[in-house]
Length: 120
Image 1 (cartoon, helix red, strand yellow):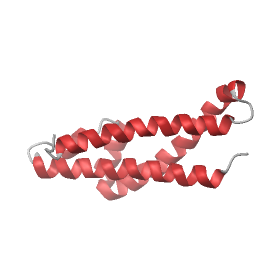
Image 2 (cartoon, one colour):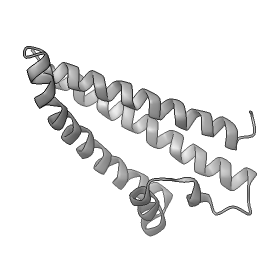
Image 3 (tube, rainbow, N blue to C red):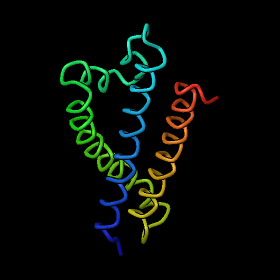
């Protein structure tokens, strides 16, 4: 049985952590590399355009909402192959796959935070 409350809360936590580290990266670039345009470190063109149009705070909030919708759309897309492979736990397997993906995203963002903060 799928516990959607846990999945929604975990998705919000993962996406929020990603957005917080992204904001910290941009702040670190603004502080330590003043000649570099801070939003240029964002490799996602949609996120970058939201930052440029709405500012860092509101752009992050709007892109976080978009990321949450994308997360659940990706779960839906992953559900069907997982249903063939694990029919009783397809939603859980799709969720675990996305958690592993977000773990890599968070590790990558953390690495660049340490790099832009001049700690490594």
